[in-house]
Length: 289
Ligand code: RET
Image (cartoon, rainbow, N blue to C red; front, top):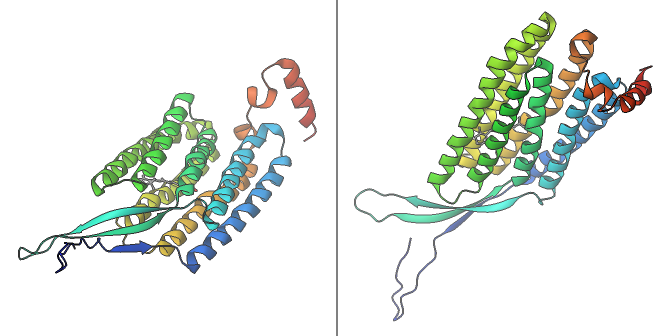
């Protein structure tokens, strides 16, 4: 609230300022998830070396996902991947009283968005390859995914409430494009691959859909409406990240090993390289695997 002091020179008292910052619970959580993501990465990398090159792509993608998460959690735990963003709040009052204003500075964990912009396309690629989706649908889903994360980042740094929710709406629209591609396109192609692949794809896609849908919900409550503390936000995303990356990865790779090799083996450039001589060398390298 602005008031005039009873002096000869009017003085403007600045709007009050509040800070919403991470506490000990949040910091400890970030370090715990950093360790979990690191251990998962090591496990996925070891698993990748133990399968022949024709089956390695899923292992590699899954390992990249947790490696990026390890880096992002290190950035957040050390404070390097965090910025303070000011939100100007206006409160309306009844009975003709003037509006009051204050500014809330809340931490925005921008390292998350860097992480998501790399890992969510990789997660989609894992699912798309499993389902045998066509290139056109894969490209649309991945581009929509990058749009979803970047517009989410703009929402996080938005200067006004209006633009924040505008970006949020655009991000949600992009999310719907991903779901459409995954539900309509991939379900059909996965079932066509084999009954086992179809069943497994349906289970892991439902799991993914439920988890992914919780991200915008958490965002809306925490970053958006600022209804819960930064610590609660960190813990919520931590649980989601562990389930959507590490647990997803273990489930995918273990189930993948159990599926008949002919249903999940990748041929073409992936196994044989771009030239026949290079391909011969690569296949030879792994022939006994
Ligand atoms: C934001 C905010 C704006 C609206 C929407 C969002 C969606 C985010 C999603 C994130 C998924 C992250 C995953 C991380 C992996 O570990 C950007 C939160 C729709 C769906 C799966």
